[in-house]
Image 1 (tube, rainbow, N blue to C red):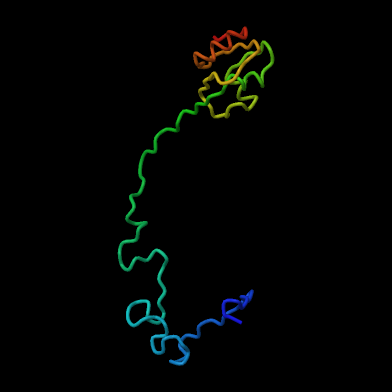
Image 2 (image 1 turned 90 degrees about the horizontal axis):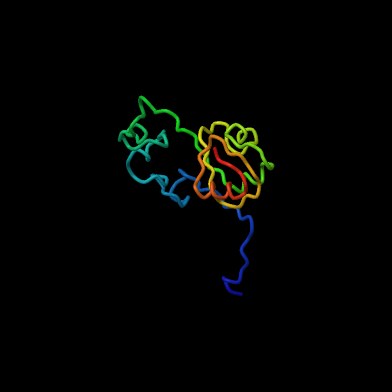
Length: 147
């Protein structure tokens, strides 16, 4: 039998180190595993996680945000021609209110631009929306119009 052939025990539980029990305990002796001098070797030592040995803590060195934060960004969204083809019937009008009702854009959206990805085979009327040149070409080819 060799040492490397002995199977490892599962769920092995070790006894904890018994600090402060003399030189025969295997831990320290008079220093009890704390080293010799310093703050951490003294009795009753407790320091916060953010304590940096007397330095000004990191969270106090960081600049604080004050004053004007600016206005919220104008919500704009893009939607593709193939999405319009899936969600609208022949001859329907497409504007920002209808897109919000069908939950194709967020309710906070202020601008919508129609892009030209995909194909469209339905005649749709686009009103008051920005439309890319490729999308205009595809919509007009299908018989629709852009106003």
